[in-house]
Length: 148
Image (cartoon, rainbow, N blue to C red; front, side):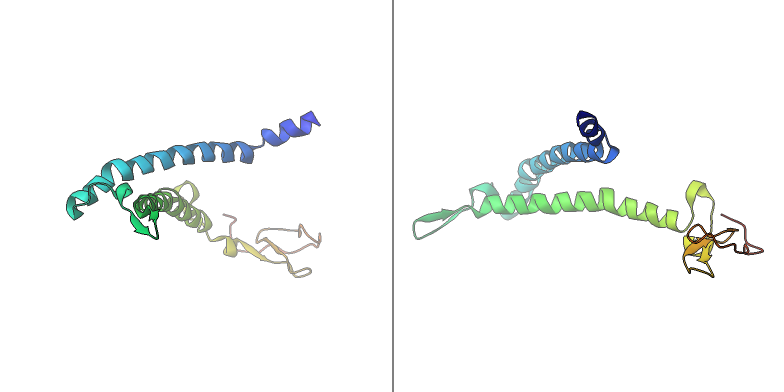
């Protein structure tokens, strides 16, 4: 039982997730400090309000602190922009280059052009295959195409 727990804990995706959570928390603190200490005073200098956190209104003797909400909303927008422009966009460009076959700087055919349907089971097999990996049917390789 301890061996399976150890295997689980040291699996690559668990470690990656733990690192991502720690870095995400640190990034959240940095962005919150950026919003509260730099961006909010800058906006306040333009708009005249020195601190969004102090913005409140009262309704039926209940006080609503909407300034903290504004600070949190600005932090969320900056975290979202940072994640999108710093992680999502570069990774999607990298994946699209890999899908198009730009690994190691050499242009290759897209993956769709490197496979074909097996005539027996209709599963996708490499164009240069001599036998289908799914049904073991012998197939003729496509002549005139190089793999990769």
